[in-house]
Length: 412
Figure 1 (tube, helix red, strand yellow):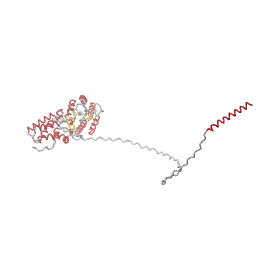
Figure 2 (cartoon, one colour):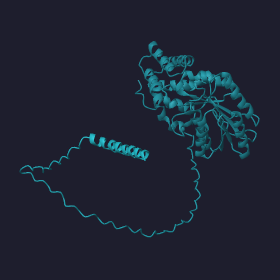
Figure 3 (cartoon, helix red, strand yellow):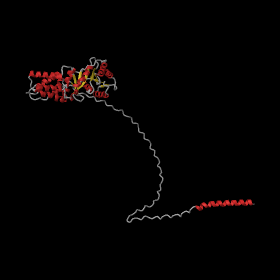
Figure 4 (cartoon, helix red, strand yellow):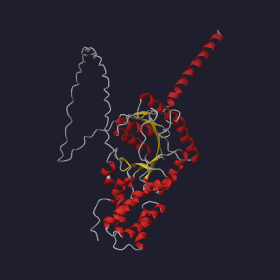
Protein backbone atom coordinates (compact mmCIF):
# COMPACT_ATOMS: atom_id res chain seq x y z
CA UNK A 1 0.00 0.00 0.00
CA UNK A 2 2.79 2.27 0.83
CA UNK A 3 4.47 1.50 -2.51
CA UNK A 4 1.34 2.55 -4.46
CA UNK A 5 1.06 5.79 -2.56
CA UNK A 6 4.67 6.76 -3.31
CA UNK A 7 4.25 6.03 -6.99
CA UNK A 8 1.11 8.16 -7.17
CA UNK A 9 2.84 11.07 -5.52
CA UNK A 10 5.78 10.87 -7.90
CA UNK A 11 3.47 10.83 -10.91
CA UNK A 12 1.57 13.78 -9.61
CA UNK A 13 4.80 15.71 -9.10
CA UNK A 14 5.88 15.06 -12.70
CA UNK A 15 2.58 16.34 -14.03
CA UNK A 16 2.81 19.51 -11.96
CA UNK A 17 6.34 20.26 -13.13
CA UNK A 18 5.38 19.74 -16.80
CA UNK A 19 2.48 22.13 -16.51
CA UNK A 20 4.69 24.77 -14.91
CA UNK A 21 7.29 24.39 -17.75
CA UNK A 22 4.66 25.07 -20.34
CA UNK A 23 3.34 28.21 -18.65
CA UNK A 24 6.67 29.97 -17.94
CA UNK A 25 7.62 30.87 -21.64
CA UNK A 26 4.25 32.39 -22.24
CA UNK A 27 4.60 34.53 -19.15
CA UNK A 28 8.04 35.84 -20.27
CA UNK A 29 6.81 37.14 -23.71
CA UNK A 30 6.21 40.98 -23.82
CA UNK A 31 2.66 42.07 -24.52
CA UNK A 32 1.84 43.16 -28.10
CA UNK A 33 1.48 46.93 -28.66
CA UNK A 34 -2.02 48.10 -29.52
CA UNK A 35 -2.73 48.66 -33.27
CA UNK A 36 -2.35 52.26 -34.41
CA UNK A 37 -5.34 53.74 -36.17
CA UNK A 38 -4.86 54.65 -39.90
CA UNK A 39 -4.33 58.36 -40.58
CA UNK A 40 -7.34 60.07 -42.02
CA UNK A 41 -7.25 60.66 -45.80
CA UNK A 42 -7.40 64.36 -46.52
CA UNK A 43 -8.90 65.48 -49.76
CA UNK A 44 -6.58 67.76 -51.75
CA UNK A 45 -7.70 71.29 -51.76
CA UNK A 46 -8.52 72.65 -55.17
CA UNK A 47 -6.85 75.93 -56.08
CA UNK A 48 -9.15 78.82 -56.54
CA UNK A 49 -10.07 79.58 -60.17
CA UNK A 50 -8.84 76.23 -61.53
CA UNK A 51 -11.40 73.93 -63.03
CA UNK A 52 -10.58 70.32 -62.55
CA UNK A 53 -12.24 67.86 -64.86
CA UNK A 54 -14.22 65.28 -63.09
CA UNK A 55 -13.28 61.72 -63.99
CA UNK A 56 -15.69 60.16 -66.45
CA UNK A 57 -18.25 57.88 -64.96
CA UNK A 58 -17.37 54.27 -65.00
CA UNK A 59 -18.59 52.49 -68.10
CA UNK A 60 -20.21 49.18 -68.00
CA UNK A 61 -18.03 46.46 -69.44
CA UNK A 62 -18.56 45.91 -73.16
CA UNK A 63 -20.32 42.80 -74.07
CA UNK A 64 -18.16 41.01 -76.67
CA UNK A 65 -20.20 39.01 -79.04
CA UNK A 66 -18.22 36.08 -80.43
CA UNK A 67 -17.57 36.41 -84.18
CA UNK A 68 -19.02 33.79 -86.33
CA UNK A 69 -16.49 32.77 -89.03
CA UNK A 70 -17.84 33.17 -92.54
CA UNK A 71 -17.90 30.01 -94.58
CA UNK A 72 -14.73 29.66 -96.71
CA UNK A 73 -15.38 30.31 -100.36
CA UNK A 74 -13.29 28.06 -102.55
CA UNK A 75 -12.34 29.85 -105.80
CA UNK A 76 -11.68 27.35 -108.55
CA UNK A 77 -8.18 27.66 -110.08
CA UNK A 78 -8.24 29.22 -113.51
CA UNK A 79 -5.96 27.31 -115.83
CA UNK A 80 -4.69 29.58 -118.59
CA UNK A 81 -4.39 28.02 -121.98
CA UNK A 82 -0.82 27.24 -123.00
CA UNK A 83 0.64 30.00 -125.18
CA UNK A 84 2.89 28.68 -127.86
CA UNK A 85 6.04 30.75 -128.35
CA UNK A 86 6.25 32.28 -131.75
CA UNK A 87 9.44 31.55 -133.63
CA UNK A 88 11.82 34.50 -133.69
CA UNK A 89 11.75 36.21 -137.03
CA UNK A 90 15.29 36.67 -138.28
CA UNK A 91 15.46 39.42 -140.85
CA UNK A 92 17.99 38.96 -143.61
CA UNK A 93 20.98 41.29 -143.29
CA UNK A 94 20.89 44.45 -145.34
CA UNK A 95 23.46 44.14 -148.10
CA UNK A 96 25.09 47.44 -148.94
CA UNK A 97 26.16 48.48 -152.41
CA UNK A 98 29.55 50.21 -152.15
CA UNK A 99 30.16 53.21 -154.34
CA UNK A 100 32.26 52.68 -157.44
CA UNK A 101 35.96 53.27 -156.90
CA UNK A 102 36.42 55.32 -160.05
CA UNK A 103 36.87 58.98 -159.17
CA UNK A 104 37.07 58.47 -155.40
CA UNK A 105 40.39 60.27 -155.15
CA UNK A 106 38.97 63.29 -156.93
CA UNK A 107 35.76 63.23 -154.88
CA UNK A 108 37.75 63.08 -151.65
CA UNK A 109 40.03 65.96 -152.59
CA UNK A 110 38.80 67.98 -149.61
CA UNK A 111 40.11 65.28 -147.25
CA UNK A 112 43.63 66.26 -148.26
CA UNK A 113 43.18 69.86 -147.18
CA UNK A 114 45.40 69.40 -144.13
CA UNK A 115 48.19 68.02 -146.29
CA UNK A 116 47.60 70.73 -148.85
CA UNK A 117 48.08 73.53 -146.31
CA UNK A 118 51.68 72.55 -145.54
CA UNK A 119 52.79 70.49 -148.49
CA UNK A 120 51.12 72.24 -151.39
CA UNK A 121 50.39 75.83 -150.46
CA UNK A 122 53.66 76.25 -148.61
CA UNK A 123 55.71 75.16 -151.59
CA UNK A 124 53.69 77.18 -154.07
CA UNK A 125 54.03 80.23 -151.88
CA UNK A 126 57.80 79.91 -151.96
CA UNK A 127 57.94 79.30 -155.70
CA UNK A 128 55.75 82.34 -156.35
CA UNK A 129 58.39 84.79 -155.12
CA UNK A 130 59.71 87.29 -157.58
CA UNK A 131 63.28 86.20 -157.02
CA UNK A 132 64.33 82.67 -156.10
CA UNK A 133 67.66 83.06 -154.34
CA UNK A 134 69.61 80.48 -152.36
CA UNK A 135 67.63 81.17 -149.21
CA UNK A 136 64.37 80.52 -151.08
CA UNK A 137 65.63 77.21 -152.46
CA UNK A 138 66.76 76.16 -148.98
CA UNK A 139 63.29 76.90 -147.64
CA UNK A 140 61.77 74.80 -150.41
CA UNK A 141 64.11 71.96 -149.51
CA UNK A 142 63.24 72.23 -145.82
CA UNK A 143 59.52 72.16 -146.63
CA UNK A 144 59.87 68.93 -148.59
CA UNK A 145 61.89 67.27 -145.83
CA UNK A 146 59.35 68.39 -143.23
CA UNK A 147 56.60 66.84 -145.35
CA UNK A 148 58.34 63.43 -144.98
CA UNK A 149 59.47 63.24 -148.60
CA UNK A 150 62.88 62.08 -147.44
CA UNK A 151 66.33 63.65 -147.75
CA UNK A 152 67.50 61.91 -150.90
CA UNK A 153 64.23 62.36 -152.76
CA UNK A 154 64.09 66.01 -151.69
CA UNK A 155 67.53 66.78 -153.07
CA UNK A 156 66.69 65.18 -156.38
CA UNK A 157 63.41 67.06 -156.68
CA UNK A 158 64.96 70.43 -155.76
CA UNK A 159 67.96 69.99 -158.06
CA UNK A 160 65.75 69.11 -161.03
CA UNK A 161 63.34 71.94 -160.25
CA UNK A 162 66.18 74.50 -160.02
CA UNK A 163 67.66 73.32 -163.30
CA UNK A 164 64.38 73.40 -165.20
CA UNK A 165 63.50 76.80 -163.78
CA UNK A 166 66.85 78.19 -164.88
CA UNK A 167 66.72 76.66 -168.34
CA UNK A 168 63.09 77.44 -169.09
CA UNK A 169 63.18 80.82 -167.41
CA UNK A 170 59.83 80.16 -165.78
CA UNK A 171 58.75 82.89 -163.36
CA UNK A 172 54.94 82.76 -163.40
CA UNK A 173 52.98 81.09 -160.60
CA UNK A 174 51.15 78.77 -162.99
CA UNK A 175 54.40 77.81 -164.71
CA UNK A 176 56.13 77.02 -161.42
CA UNK A 177 53.11 75.03 -160.27
CA UNK A 178 53.22 72.93 -163.43
CA UNK A 179 56.94 72.27 -163.00
CA UNK A 180 56.50 71.28 -159.35
CA UNK A 181 53.59 68.97 -160.21
CA UNK A 182 55.66 67.23 -162.88
CA UNK A 183 58.56 66.65 -160.51
CA UNK A 184 56.31 65.26 -157.77
CA UNK A 185 54.54 62.92 -160.17
CA UNK A 186 57.91 61.74 -161.46
CA UNK A 187 59.06 61.06 -157.89
CA UNK A 188 55.98 58.83 -157.41
CA UNK A 189 57.07 56.55 -160.27
CA UNK A 190 53.84 56.59 -162.31
CA UNK A 191 55.09 53.70 -164.45
CA UNK A 192 54.64 51.19 -161.59
CA UNK A 193 51.77 48.71 -161.83
CA UNK A 194 49.19 49.68 -159.22
CA UNK A 195 46.39 47.32 -160.21
CA UNK A 196 45.17 44.63 -157.83
CA UNK A 197 45.31 41.03 -159.02
CA UNK A 198 41.83 39.96 -157.99
CA UNK A 199 41.31 36.88 -160.17
CA UNK A 200 43.33 33.68 -160.04
CA UNK A 201 45.31 32.58 -163.05
CA UNK A 202 44.49 28.85 -162.72
CA UNK A 203 40.74 29.13 -162.20
CA UNK A 204 41.05 29.21 -158.42
CA UNK A 205 40.27 32.37 -156.44
CA UNK A 206 42.95 35.03 -156.21
CA UNK A 207 44.52 35.05 -152.74
CA UNK A 208 45.40 38.39 -151.13
CA UNK A 209 47.29 38.48 -147.83
CA UNK A 210 46.95 41.66 -145.77
CA UNK A 211 49.89 42.24 -143.40
CA UNK A 212 50.94 45.05 -141.09
CA UNK A 213 51.47 45.96 -137.46
CA UNK A 214 48.56 46.21 -135.04
CA UNK A 215 47.33 49.78 -134.71
CA UNK A 216 47.76 50.72 -138.36
CA UNK A 217 44.10 49.96 -139.05
CA UNK A 218 44.87 46.63 -140.69
CA UNK A 219 41.61 44.81 -139.98
CA UNK A 220 39.50 47.86 -140.83
CA UNK A 221 41.46 48.32 -144.03
CA UNK A 222 40.92 44.65 -144.86
CA UNK A 223 37.17 45.23 -144.60
CA UNK A 224 37.42 48.33 -146.78
CA UNK A 225 39.43 46.43 -149.40
CA UNK A 226 36.57 43.92 -149.52
CA UNK A 227 34.22 46.82 -150.27
CA UNK A 228 36.55 48.03 -153.03
CA UNK A 229 36.54 44.58 -154.62
CA UNK A 230 32.74 44.24 -154.34
CA UNK A 231 32.31 47.73 -155.80
CA UNK A 232 34.38 46.61 -158.79
CA UNK A 233 32.16 43.57 -159.29
CA UNK A 234 34.20 40.89 -157.53
CA UNK A 235 32.87 38.23 -155.16
CA UNK A 236 34.90 38.05 -151.96
CA UNK A 237 35.48 35.66 -149.06
CA UNK A 238 37.27 36.84 -145.92
CA UNK A 239 39.64 34.80 -143.76
CA UNK A 240 40.06 35.97 -140.15
CA UNK A 241 43.59 34.65 -139.54
CA UNK A 242 44.39 37.25 -136.87
CA UNK A 243 43.44 34.87 -134.07
CA UNK A 244 45.46 36.61 -131.35
CA UNK A 245 43.02 39.53 -131.03
CA UNK A 246 39.57 38.48 -129.89
CA UNK A 247 37.90 41.47 -131.54
CA UNK A 248 39.60 41.04 -134.92
CA UNK A 249 37.38 38.21 -136.16
CA UNK A 250 34.20 39.94 -134.93
CA UNK A 251 35.26 43.18 -136.57
CA UNK A 252 35.97 41.44 -139.86
CA UNK A 253 32.64 39.60 -139.69
CA UNK A 254 30.87 42.94 -139.35
CA UNK A 255 32.58 44.30 -142.44
CA UNK A 256 31.85 41.16 -144.40
CA UNK A 257 28.20 41.11 -143.40
CA UNK A 258 27.67 44.58 -144.84
CA UNK A 259 28.55 43.46 -148.36
CA UNK A 260 27.36 39.86 -148.10
CA UNK A 261 30.85 38.36 -147.94
CA UNK A 262 31.33 35.08 -146.06
CA UNK A 263 33.90 35.03 -143.25
CA UNK A 264 35.92 31.96 -142.27
CA UNK A 265 37.17 32.14 -138.69
CA UNK A 266 38.53 29.88 -135.97
CA UNK A 267 38.53 29.88 -132.17
CA UNK A 268 40.56 32.47 -130.31
CA UNK A 269 44.23 31.50 -130.26
CA UNK A 270 43.88 29.04 -133.12
CA UNK A 271 46.70 28.47 -135.60
CA UNK A 272 46.57 31.38 -138.10
CA UNK A 273 47.92 29.19 -140.91
CA UNK A 274 45.11 26.68 -140.37
CA UNK A 275 42.45 29.41 -140.58
CA UNK A 276 44.03 30.81 -143.75
CA UNK A 277 44.14 27.33 -145.29
CA UNK A 278 40.46 26.72 -144.50
CA UNK A 279 39.52 30.12 -145.93
CA UNK A 280 41.21 29.42 -149.27
CA UNK A 281 39.70 25.93 -149.43
CA UNK A 282 36.24 27.37 -148.74
CA UNK A 283 36.79 30.00 -151.43
CA UNK A 284 37.61 27.26 -153.94
CA UNK A 285 34.50 25.28 -152.95
CA UNK A 286 32.08 28.20 -153.34
CA UNK A 287 33.85 29.62 -156.38
CA UNK A 288 34.49 33.23 -155.31
CA UNK A 289 36.79 35.55 -157.24
CA UNK A 290 39.00 36.65 -154.35
CA UNK A 291 39.96 35.34 -150.90
CA UNK A 292 41.14 38.13 -148.62
CA UNK A 293 43.14 36.94 -145.58
CA UNK A 294 43.71 39.20 -142.57
CA UNK A 295 46.90 38.14 -140.76
CA UNK A 296 48.27 38.84 -137.29
CA UNK A 297 50.38 41.95 -136.83
CA UNK A 298 52.44 41.26 -133.73
CA UNK A 299 55.96 42.66 -133.74
CA UNK A 300 57.34 41.42 -130.42
CA UNK A 301 60.35 40.02 -132.21
CA UNK A 302 61.34 39.73 -135.80
CA UNK A 303 62.05 35.99 -135.71
CA UNK A 304 58.58 35.13 -134.40
CA UNK A 305 56.93 37.31 -137.02
CA UNK A 306 58.96 35.74 -139.81
CA UNK A 307 58.07 32.23 -138.67
CA UNK A 308 54.38 33.04 -138.34
CA UNK A 309 53.90 34.85 -141.66
CA UNK A 310 56.18 32.42 -143.47
CA UNK A 311 54.08 29.52 -142.24
CA UNK A 312 50.84 31.20 -143.31
CA UNK A 313 52.19 31.78 -146.79
CA UNK A 314 53.55 28.23 -147.17
CA UNK A 315 50.28 26.65 -146.03
CA UNK A 316 48.16 28.84 -148.30
CA UNK A 317 50.39 28.08 -151.29
CA UNK A 318 49.38 24.41 -151.03
CA UNK A 319 46.21 25.53 -152.84
CA UNK A 320 48.04 27.79 -155.26
CA UNK A 321 50.24 30.90 -155.39
CA UNK A 322 49.57 34.01 -153.33
CA UNK A 323 48.57 36.67 -155.85
CA UNK A 324 48.96 39.80 -153.69
CA UNK A 325 50.55 40.69 -150.36
CA UNK A 326 49.42 44.14 -149.28
CA UNK A 327 51.27 45.98 -146.51
CA UNK A 328 49.14 48.37 -144.45
CA UNK A 329 51.04 51.44 -143.20
CA UNK A 330 49.88 54.30 -141.00
CA UNK A 331 50.71 57.59 -142.73
CA UNK A 332 50.80 59.45 -139.41
CA UNK A 333 53.84 57.48 -138.22
CA UNK A 334 56.02 59.14 -140.86
CA UNK A 335 59.56 57.90 -141.27
CA UNK A 336 59.24 55.62 -138.23
CA UNK A 337 56.69 53.52 -140.07
CA UNK A 338 59.22 52.78 -142.79
CA UNK A 339 61.39 50.84 -140.36
CA UNK A 340 58.45 48.60 -139.49
CA UNK A 341 57.63 48.23 -143.17
CA UNK A 342 61.13 47.02 -143.96
CA UNK A 343 60.69 44.10 -141.54
CA UNK A 344 57.64 42.88 -143.44
CA UNK A 345 59.32 43.20 -146.81
CA UNK A 346 62.06 40.90 -145.53
CA UNK A 347 59.53 38.32 -144.33
CA UNK A 348 57.10 38.11 -147.24
CA UNK A 349 57.08 39.27 -150.83
CA UNK A 350 55.11 42.52 -150.47
CA UNK A 351 53.55 43.54 -153.78
CA UNK A 352 51.76 46.73 -152.77
CA UNK A 353 51.25 49.27 -149.99
CA UNK A 354 47.99 50.52 -148.50
CA UNK A 355 48.63 53.89 -146.86
CA UNK A 356 45.97 54.65 -144.24
CA UNK A 357 45.05 57.80 -142.29
CA UNK A 358 46.44 60.07 -144.97
CA UNK A 359 43.80 62.64 -144.06
CA UNK A 360 45.17 62.80 -140.51
CA UNK A 361 48.61 64.08 -141.43
CA UNK A 362 49.95 67.26 -142.96
CA UNK A 363 52.86 65.31 -144.45
CA UNK A 364 51.62 63.96 -147.77
CA UNK A 365 55.18 63.40 -148.90
CA UNK A 366 55.23 60.07 -147.03
CA UNK A 367 53.82 58.48 -150.19
CA UNK A 368 57.02 59.40 -152.05
CA UNK A 369 59.23 58.19 -149.21
CA UNK A 370 57.45 54.81 -149.03
CA UNK A 371 57.97 54.08 -152.69
CA UNK A 372 61.54 55.36 -152.72
CA UNK A 373 62.71 53.33 -149.73
CA UNK A 374 60.71 50.16 -150.24
CA UNK A 375 60.60 50.05 -154.01
CA UNK A 376 56.95 48.95 -153.72
CA UNK A 377 54.04 50.83 -155.33
CA UNK A 378 51.35 52.43 -153.22
CA UNK A 379 48.14 50.87 -154.53
CA UNK A 380 45.48 52.15 -152.14
CA UNK A 381 45.20 55.18 -149.86
CA UNK A 382 42.83 55.78 -146.96
CA UNK A 383 41.45 59.29 -146.83
CA UNK A 384 38.93 59.11 -143.99
CA UNK A 385 36.95 56.97 -141.56
CA UNK A 386 34.02 56.30 -143.88
CA UNK A 387 33.51 52.77 -145.25
CA UNK A 388 34.16 53.92 -148.81
CA UNK A 389 37.08 56.26 -148.08
CA UNK A 390 39.66 53.85 -149.47
CA UNK A 391 40.66 54.83 -152.99
CA UNK A 392 42.94 53.38 -155.66
CA UNK A 393 46.07 55.48 -155.81
CA UNK A 394 46.76 57.55 -158.90
CA UNK A 395 49.93 59.74 -158.84
CA UNK A 396 48.56 62.49 -161.11
CA UNK A 397 45.29 62.87 -159.24
CA UNK A 398 47.07 62.71 -155.90
CA UNK A 399 49.56 65.48 -156.75
CA UNK A 400 46.78 67.62 -158.16
CA UNK A 401 44.87 67.20 -154.89
CA UNK A 402 47.97 68.10 -152.87
CA UNK A 403 48.67 71.28 -154.80
CA UNK A 404 44.99 72.25 -154.98
CA UNK A 405 43.09 74.06 -157.66
CA UNK A 406 42.87 77.50 -156.08
CA UNK A 407 44.30 80.33 -158.18
CA UNK A 408 47.80 81.21 -157.11
CA UNK A 409 47.71 84.82 -158.27
CA UNK A 410 48.27 86.65 -161.52
CA UNK A 411 51.17 85.90 -163.76
CA UNK A 412 54.11 88.25 -163.51
